[in-house]
Image 1 (spheres, rainbow, N blue to C red):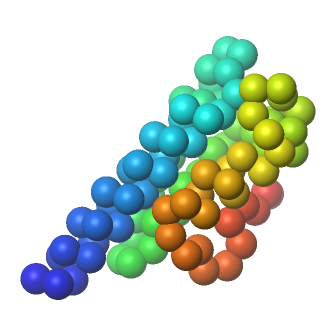
Image 2 (cartoon, rainbow, N blue to C red):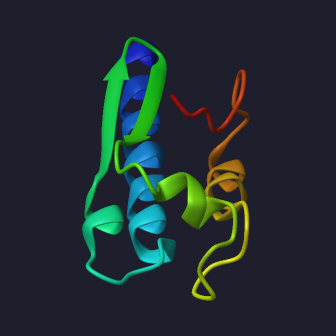
Length: 88
């Protein structure tokens, strides 16, 4: 029961984080904001955005959001293990 409750809490928290990322992502065409994806495997939530230019948005290229808006958003939703943002 506790494990199921923990997974439910993880899922709910991760969904809230994604909603906030969608709301805080700078918008021109809406592609970057609509491209956030959530994957939960076991006790790990991974949020991704495969839009190539999201890294530039996160670096502060838009006046609509400050640099590091991704990290600033996600740090409010828990204690991440490892890097918050990575780019391929």
